[in-house]
Image 1 (tube, helix red, strand yellow):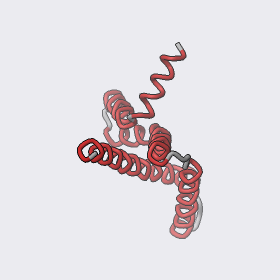
Image 2 (cartoon, rainbow, N blue to C red):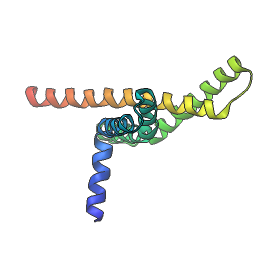
Image 3 (cartoon, helix red, strand yellow):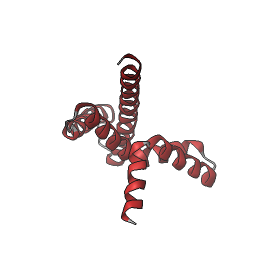
Image 4 (tube, helix red, strand yellow):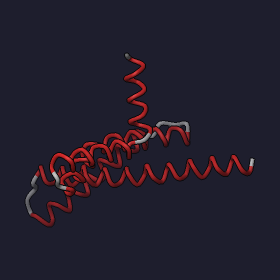
Amino acid sequence: MIDFLAAIGTMLLTFPPAVWYLVYISVVKTTKNKGKALRRASDSTAVLFIAAAALLLHQITGDSYVWLLIVIILLTAVVFTIIHYRTMHDIECKRLLKGIWRFTFFLYFCVYLLLCFYLLGTSLLSTFLG
């Protein structure tokens, strides 16, 4: 049973876009609202994309850069808070946290894609050239 759960966890971290798509499709089928499905899928899979980016960075470099990913999230939160305060003159915590979390999803989705393309390119080059 533990091996089965480990396999599911590995699959989730290896390919988070599949999980995002499954969440998106299930929410669209239940609510018939594509915008809500997009937001809910993004909100629920952000952690998977952060963890997958950390694992890909570890695979590429051999070092753990979890601390860097956390620092980037904290810097994003600081910048968003400053911008939110200057534009609204009041901090709405729920709205601010949603914005930070969704930007974090977008950022780490892009990082995940870049790292995947980098690994794909290096493996193809090493296969054909070496």
